[in-house]
Structures are given as structure tokens and as C-alpha cells.
Image (cartoon, rainbow, N blue to C red):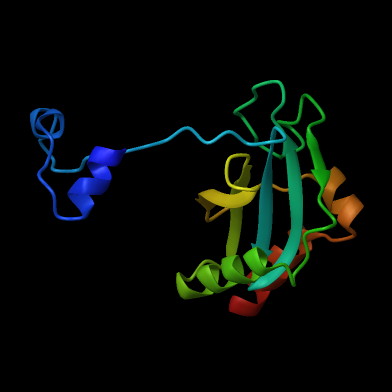
Length: 154
């Protein structure tokens, strides 16, 4: 990483980068981010309004986080009631959705164990499946909210 910092500062591009430069010109650099504890949070937004935040347990290594009731073979979803419409990240996500014309969106993030649990948004879904259990815990019906949005747009 020190070599890459040098390049960003105007230094010479290392030989290993020049040799591995992809044909399409896009050089992707990634780092492993370890969530601690092992869960993903999904924030649901409908019509510019916060719906709820859902915790998805990934402690068993799960990567299929489909929240639809037909997908939820293992009960891994719960409501994160400490995340509200006033949470700074939620406000940023609502602004992002509005800026990009996303009337219905699910944003997924993890909390980086190496960065004082700073949230890292890694996925934006312009559609979603809702978990009935989480909706019941949160006291909302986002299916109704989506239907109302459609009615308002028609």
C-alpha cells in the first residue's frame, strides 16, 4: 500500500502495476473488511422515508441474505431499533436515494472492525424483499408503503 500511496502522490508507478495493467484500463484494488460482530445491516427506504433497519446475521458465513419470507430458511433477520430516521448514515442514504431517483431502495452496510466500527455501505438495491418478521418488530408495513407510492405515481 505504501507504493500505491507514492503513486497517488505523483511518484513512479511500480513495475508490478505496469505489468499487470488490465486491457480495459480499470485497475481494481480491494481490501478485506471484517465486520465485527458478524452481521450486515440493511436500511430500507420507500418514497424518501426511512422504513427500518434490519440486522442480518452472517456468523455462519452466509452470503445469501434474501430477506423474503420464502428465502428465510434460517431465522437470521431482526430489527435494529437503535437505527432511526435521525441516524446520520440514514440521512445520507435518504439523500443519496433522492439524488439518484431511487424511490424504493435497500442499502447494505457492515461495520468495519478495524475502523472503530465505521459503517461501510457496500450494496445498493433499487428493489427489495421485506421480511414480515422484521416489519412486525418495527411496526411498519413497507408493502403498503410501496403500494401507496405506486398509487401516488399513477
